Structures are given as structure tokens and as C-alpha cells.
Length: 208
Image 1 (cartoon, helix red, strand yellow):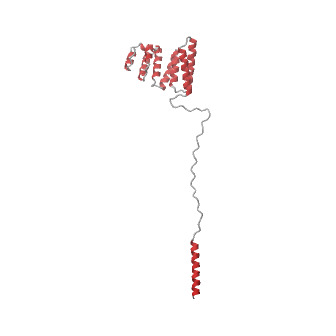
Image 2 (image 1 turned 45 degrees about the vertical axis):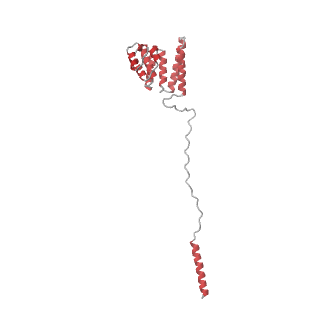
Image 3 (image 1 turned 135 degrees about the vertical axis):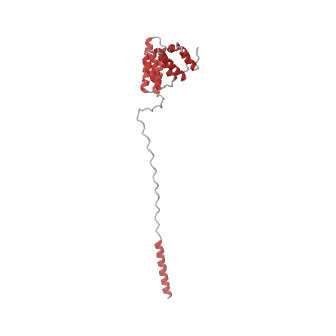
């Protein structure tokens, strides 16, 4: 009886161990988490084509344009001091060419038109001067110097009323070259007019 009980007990133990062993899940190897790959960095912009130049900021002429203006003004200076008509004409033509080159490079640069207009005035080509100065005024109406140059052109053409209007506009915008107001031969016709002093007094400008 004891043997039978021992045998049954052993059978139960073996059976229990088998059940417990069956319930244990085999360990599976850990799988490494794969993080999402970061997006590739954006491609750099392509370089500009060879030979292109950076666009200058609005209202600011390029160095090339400034160079043409500087050279043109140098020719004008030589022409003013020329002691012969040939030297005068040659340098004024050179100046006009330089100002024209500046205009071709930057058609919106008001000072280039104004300077070329003054050069035409020196040649007594008043209609051409007037066209350039009107264009300069259109591009930069608040420039005191451009308005004064336009007043000078009208004065030389005998259009005194227009000249006085432009002189008024120049003074309103801060024109302060009082020596020009006293001595500039280009505005002699304006100085002779009775309204000249009235305009100066309006802007509190008093000259002898």
C-alpha cells in the first residue's frame, strides 16, 4: 500500500513539473528599436552663373555707374577751365558719353540725367537739357539740386515763370548754395524778376 502511494505521488510530481515547464515561455531575443531616420538636410542653393553681378539695393547705383559719373564730372571740370573751344567741346562730349553710359547701366538713376542735362546746358542745347532734367525730376522730385538745375535751364531758355517755380521748389527742399543764388549766371533772368526776392524771403533766405 505504501509503495502504491509512493508511486502515485511520484507520478503526480512528474506530471506537475511537466505542466510547470510547459507554462514557461521561451525568451525571445530583444529586438532593437529602429528610430526613424532624420530627413536629409535641404540641398544648398545652386551658385549663380559665372559672370553675373549682385543686384544693387534700390536707389543705390552700382560701382560701375558711380565710376561713369565720377569720370563725367572730371571731364566737366576740365571743360569749365578750358582755354580753347576745342578742348571745351572735346571734354563736354566725353562727359556726355560718360553720363549716357551711366544711364544705360542704370536708367533709374536720376543724378545721371541731371548731370547730362547740365552738360547739355553748357553746350547751349537747352531742349535736350530740359528733357534730361524733367526725367531727373520725375525720378527724384525731392532733390533740391535737380530742381535748381531745372530752374537754371528754364532761366536760360527765357521761361522765367517756370524757372521761379522750380527755384521755389528747390528752396523748399533745402537748397542752400547762397553763392549760386547770388552769382550763378544761369539764373540771371530769375534774379532780374521782382518775384525772385519774394521767393527768397518766403524761405527766409536773405542775400546781398
